Image 1 (cartoon, rainbow, N blue to C red):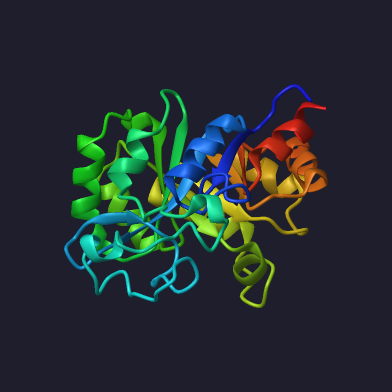
Image 2 (cartoon, helix red, strand yellow; image 1 turned 90 degrees about the vertical axis):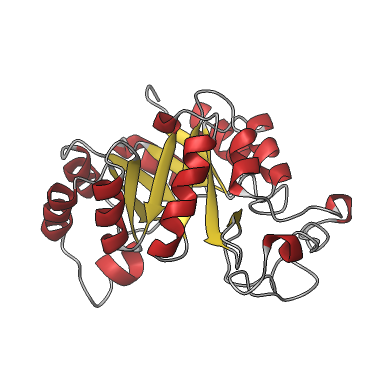
Amino acid sequence: MNDIPRIIAHRGASVAAPENSISALQRAWVEGADGVECDVRLTADCQVVCIHDADTERVAERNLSVEAHTYEELAQLDVGLKKLANFKGERIPLLSEWLANVHAGKKVLIELKTGAEILVPLFEVLDAASVALKQIVLITFDLEMVRALKAQRPGLGVYWLIDVKSNWLGRSKLKLADVLDTVVDTNVDGIGLRCHSGINREMVKAILEADIDLNIWTVDDPVDARRYASFGVTSITTNCPEVIRYALQK
């Protein structure tokens, strides 16, 4: 395989370490990832933190709402112990801490899990970070957020996420032509498609011919990864970058 897609570690190397943690991020580099993906939310005191869910029930020993608590309160929670005992003491990281551990030249996909209220504090974090802005891609399901991002920060990379199963091949039948029209209308830099058997070579070809990136997530099966790579996708997001790297280099 001549052109191997970039391998993006989903919430870091989240099979090996607690998702969205600094340990998962650092493990992603050990496993040979070309980039990392994280989720961000806003705390009660307007700090941008890396966590997927609206609360901490799934990842911590206590359940706190992210938006209703300060970062100081959230930072007291242990988000490592539920994964493995040797991650005891892992904390919810600030996005600024996450970015401080990103290597030069590596991609960072940041999924926005809240509304437009996060944009001002998010831009402040990005502007203060040592990571080059060309390494950063903001990703969201919300088309209005896509428009706002491209209007406010046209130089930042933005991907529009589409859940293929529910929004494309499901009952709503979002058509490829509509997607391509939206790409032109929003000036988006890429599309992220949820891994689904309905994604085919012709669909991928049409998207790439629109001169944008195409990311497929979340791909942990080596067979699926090789299939998407043969289609020519730009990047593949996975929970286990080492496994997918090995599969694509065979």
